[in-house]
Length: 332
Ligand code: FES
Ligand SMILES: [Fe+2]
Image (cartoon, rainbow, N blue to C red; front, side):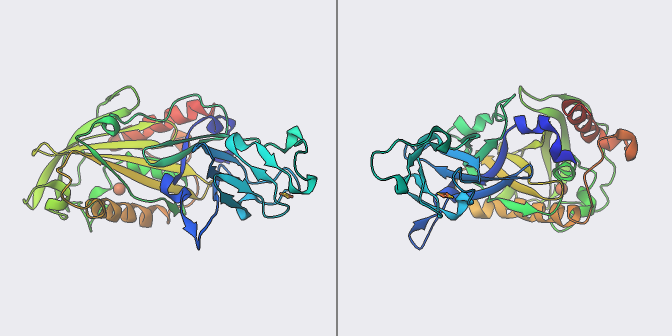
């Protein structure tokens, strides 16, 4: 099982969007329930506004805390009303009456949680690396567009492999940007793209199907100057530069729920004039993602980390290197 590798616990994973935390249903705010590396967690925003994430198990009688409610940032268990505040500290045990000491073990054994890029990131162990840095986040000439979190019935390894691969464009992306006939992939040179991403640069001719709303250009076929790279274990970033000066960055986040299921979300940063509504801008990327998903959900199991278990060719170079580094990280 891939998810049983202890090393994976020490990295950050996207489990939700920050806006999911604040959704109320009929005036009642529920904490968020997420599943990561085969374990269930409850996540909510505490009175101080900080994220709290903890195993979805009440220390009292093990009721799922996700059945509880959040009031003024405090999470109240649905079973006997024990209530948890900042840092997961138990602040109230109703059956003990007012002013009684709370047993030290009543506090929740929290895990690391952070909000960045409009996303909720969780690390169940001790983080060995920071969340990958996207400089456009702090650049006012860029806007960020979040796309929502989906649940894909495929392994996170299949996703990362796919997001590093361009040879599937004319085969899988026939309904979006893939150009029939442009099948050969030019030689790929791998390099350190910046501090956080390792990958390659390439130019690709694509169908300008989404037209101006996506590329800012009218021509039927346009050239994208691109980079694609990975950050271990499963984050991929693609940057697209159009000749108009438009930059379009995509952060692709894949999270192992278990070996056969994953969360997927992408985040876009663009230095456009902000005139096209965000949802319109990402409609094209959404359609591309749906094409990948349809393919990947039919490929069973985890991608073998043993390079000899599958056959690779020149165009697989980025994925082969990612897989080699992942295997090294896992001590496999
Ligand atoms: S099980 Fe949560 S308060 Fe009793
Ligand atoms: Fe794809």
